[in-house]
Length: 122
Image (cartoon, rainbow, N blue to C red; front, side, top):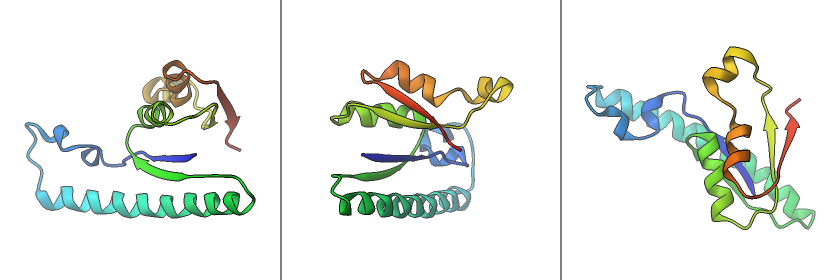
C-alpha cells in the first residue's frame, strides 16, 4: 500500500468544524477546497504511476492520497489494512520546528502495532 497524506495549506480545508464562530466568505472556503482537490488529484496520479510500475514488476500494490493530519491518516490506514511494516520518509526536523510541528514518525510509531522503518528523505 502506497499512501501519501496531503497536509492542507489552508486549515479551513480539514473540516467545516473549524469554522465555528468564524465568519469566512463562502467563496474563500470554496476556493480553498478547489485548490486542495486539485493538489490531491495530482498527488494521487503521481502515486498511482508508481503503483502501476510496481504492479508491472509483479508487486501487488494499491495507492491512495488523502487530505488530513499525516500522523492520524497513516495510523488509520495501518489499522484499517493488513500491514506488516510501515516505511516512512523523514523530514529530519530539529529543534523548534520539530517542537511546533511535531514528529509524524514519533506519532505513528506510538500508535501502530507493527514495526516502523524510517528512511532519510534524501
